[in-house]
Amino acid sequence: WKRGMITYGGQGSGPGNFQFPRSVVVSPSNEIFVVDMDNRRVQVHSTEGVYLRHFPTVVPGTEDKAMQPHDVSIDANDTLWVVGRGEIHHHVVQYSRDGDAVTKFDLPNVPYFRGIAVDIRTNHIMVTEADVESEVKVFRPDGSLVRRFGNPEMRRPCYITVDKEGNTIVSDWGIHAVYMFDKSG
Image (cartoon, rainbow, N blue to C red; front, side, top):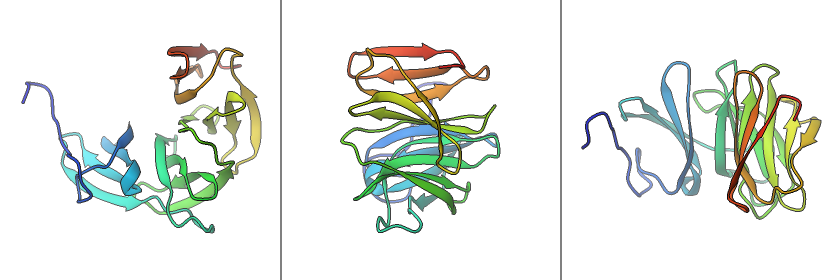
């Protein structure tokens, strides 16, 4: 153990163990939400690394009972947005902090991981698209497309975040680069 560092987890399917942890986000109340991809769930831990709870990444109203989550973000209302792969579609699902599915919208199934971020200034959901159109798609919470943006050089955009001014930062593992876009994209 190194001073100032906490490590928790380990490979497995039990509480506190992970099968490919892909993404994390910290809530305003200092709970750490970890996307546990191959266990098809989100785990919740304290900032001390203590396991608190988990919930399955169910997809309401679809044939996909649970999705394989890829990324997680949190909005200004302290609810989670998770993007992941189902058998038929990719899904964006909003969950309460306790794991109740609130709403969802579907995306075409693509062979690549997607990233998700919420612009808390506008409550827009931003999702990376790394297929034919390598870009960022911006949605309203109901799933309606607001706009899309990117760079012609982008190949495999994946993880994404938005700063408090609305600037968007996107990692691209296809060309080993990071893009920074201003709030207009």
